[in-house]
Length: 222
Image (cartoon, rainbow, N blue to C red):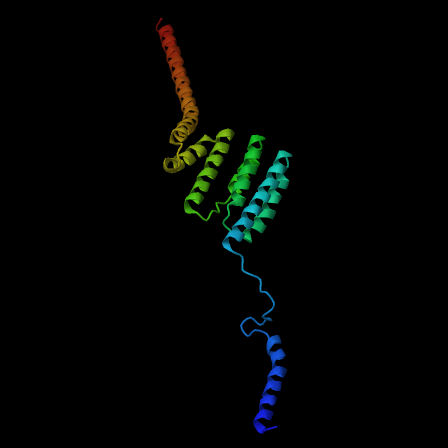
């Protein structure tokens, strides 16, 4: 066998011996074996569908607990699902909607203190600026409704007055103007009537005292 033939055999045998090592070697870019399938990143549609599924399941649980008149458990469920949904999207609006829903349940049951607490704890958390603006408007109208039901008309009047420019954007200006007038009248009329009664009473006292003085003077002149 010639020298060139021997050299060719050595190179072939060396290549066959090194080939399995090259195949089993990890990829320098990923550090993993090329045959191992890497987990694909979650697409936008997959993430969106996972978010909608979590929101739907959370809303269904809250509604089911409210139907059984268990608002405390519903509030705990909101906190649980809110923590899970925040891992997907922090501005999904789930916590705001469900807290408003629980507050409405308290208000319908006549528990106005808890309703006011839930309304105030509902923080606008939408990623959309207009939607977040609408969430603030929705929360403020419910807080004003609680003030009206409690007879705190000066506070509701100031809140309605603050919401009047926003109502031109969201609609319902006529309804808000009626509420504004009603809260103003309820705030002004009672003290105005009380002041009128005091004035009339003072005038009556003054007239009676004058009549008594005139009668005593006529008796002295006789």
